[in-house]
Image 1 (cartoon, one colour):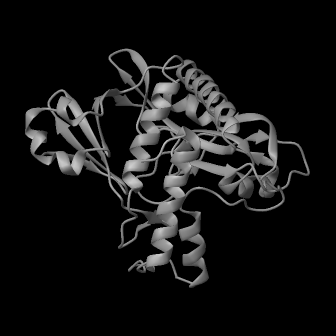
Image 2: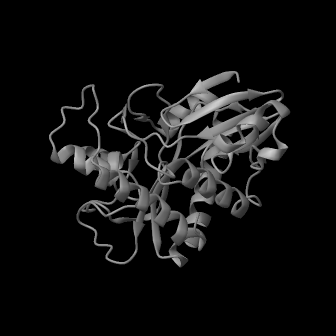
Image 3: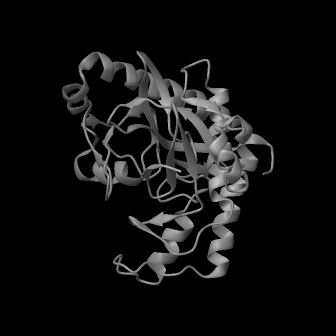
Length: 283
């Protein structure tokens, strides 16, 4: 198959007029892909994305054609065992070169920015906020898309300069509308979506939602039970791996260390648990 792109987690293949996106079990931490995969991680990312695309389809159209391998071009059928449950056939889209981040809570890079100057992406916030505090209202905090290294927070004005103010306004409005819908739903399932990021593109002249949507890799999911602002929160993502790597004082230089079996198993359980709680189903 013609490999069009390979990211830290996803492989993208040409499929005639379409693309096939495959979510692997690779896991990256501190910008390095770790040697051992996390079982079922790619299946969770794909299944959650499909769940959210369906829930949000009345807000914005998306790039999905099918997740049924039987619908893929004939040349992909021989690889059904590799593709089933972890791939999507999607429309090709002209992607907008902006990471569209919505934040409902102050955490991560947003917390670092706030501690520095009381702002996130140029948005002034109330004084005295604690780490993990809920914001008065959700904010749009875009980032530049980095091919390597961390994405960099940028201001709305920078986005408007890059893509034009009308389109910047559209993606800001859509980002916040999608986030608010998803956050309200997640709260009914006992999960806080602290922040998340989306990617948009154009299919012909229609603005669509693309790539992964509201997964543990693109979002901070916190359990509502035990939520206590004033510090970091437990989460349904690879934070457990980051904490382990910090505990062994890895210098964040290659080669990346091999994770112990119990860390791999616990991380896999966290991903599956996020899917189960949000959807009410098991993989």
